[in-house]
Amino acid sequence: MSPPEHGVPAGGPPDPDLAELRVAFARAVGAGRRDWPVEAAAEPARLATAFASAGRLCGRAPLAELPGWTCDDAARVLLLHAVSAAAVRECDPHVHNGRTHPTRGDLPALVRALYEGGDARERRAILRALPYLPCTPHPPEPNAGTLPDPHACLCRRLLVEDALRTNDHRLVAAAMGPCGYRALAPEAWRHGVLKCVFLGLPLGPTVTGLDDRADAELARMLAGFARERAAAGRPVPADIAPITSRFTPTPEEY
Amino acid sequence: MRIFDPHIHMTSRTTDDYRALRDAGVLALVEPAFWLGQPRTAVSTFTDYFDALLGWERFRAGQYGIEHHCTIALNPKEANDPRCTPVLDVLPGYLAKDRVVAVGEIGFDSMTDAEELAFRHQLALAVEFDLPALVHTPHRDKAAGVRRTLDLVRDSGIDPGRVLVDHLNETTVELVADTGCWMGFSVYPDTKMTPERTVDVLLDLGPQRVVVNSAADWGHSDPLSTLHTGRAMLAAGWREDDVDLVLWRNPVAFYAQSGRLELPSESRDFAAVPTDPTSPKDPTPARRDPTRSPGPNATFEGNSILRGARA
Image (cartoon, rainbow over all chains, first blue to last red; front, side):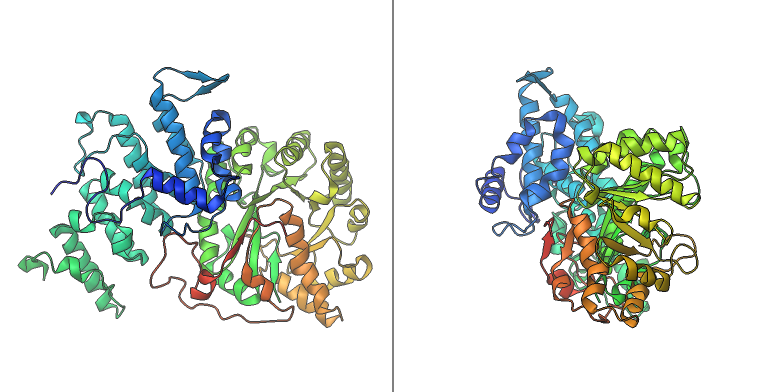
């Protein structure tokens, strides 16, 4: 089963579309900050500062209409989308009102710099923003040479893999959302699932496309984890069994 | 007793310390960027350190129910190494971040020209980024260092009410008392100040514009010295409200000038009496909410957080 090239992958929590995100954000922040993402995108020289300030300016409360989303997440995703939308419109250095805007070719480096310079909340927002940015999605078996925009896709995968190397459950969870579903090779994706279990993150709401991408190898890894836990007299997370029971173990594994 | 430690280097401390701090009533703290014992030789080791203060250390503190903030700066010791001075160029990016509540530690170590250059530059950054400044005073030739520090503060044009002059003692506090700057006492097991000496100084000075910190780091130090000082104040006859002023309201008022303090709402409910909040035995909750900060238990995670409120 191959995941869809675009749109919401099967089996995971659907991400809101941009219109829904805009409406929820506008309701949460009110008229005063509703246009902040677009206004901030119009000041490319101050982008990093604006991106860092999103929580202080727009708040960090959960969005009532979009479970799992917070005000600062939405602000940052909308800001990045506004930057990318302006960049996609122009292929040459884009001067508007005396300011030089990034081009489409600048986007991967720009996103990467924001990620590397960001704290955990900023990094999480970038991971959540990736599916809304004009990077070309690619199937789980990466074959960068055949991709229309290999650099952009490699950039995306590197960020997701970086987040999975942390021990911050917020970053690991974001990495296993839609961006990781699209960007991660099978080996990395399976280890991401295992890391979620290890960190105590619930698989259902956390891992996009779990049913779609789970395979016998993941089931083997999870069964091993469950055996370790049982041997130690520690509880085995309940969301392991539905996956292990889907795949028949080979005799040497049991 | 609710405690805000305005100066503690948690990067150097263990999870046992985090648990003990929370048990003692430390609900929030500030970790100033400083040196690490071993001198650094490249800018990238500073940025990794700053990123750890913004990222991993904040996460670690959250697991024990402590709100972690930090200050960012090129410290005076390493300002003397030309391999490190380009750190000044990367500071603006960090000074824009959430929970960066001051520029610091800045100031003098050996009172060199290079230190003075970095000190002036970073006082100007504090003004530019509308942040308070946390100023380290030297451990050698301290009185002269404090005088020179106050000269530079005056020259910079920063509001003295946004400057905390730290590591003061009996011989240097008088120099600062009338300047409008905040006065910090680092209480150590045997160097700097002891709880009893701090109480004696407070007797003359009064509790206004005074903060007490543990400045605990990788050396011989005690992360609970704020608690010990609070108890010494009570034993000497200070009112609980005065202890709360020195150990909580004063440091909160100073750093709240940044507009970037994030304090737990439960801190408002803490009585100014010794308490022993139950500490979670296992900091890893059974199930985590990926949108939330890593609180230690349901009670803490369930509470709303006062984000960025100016106290």
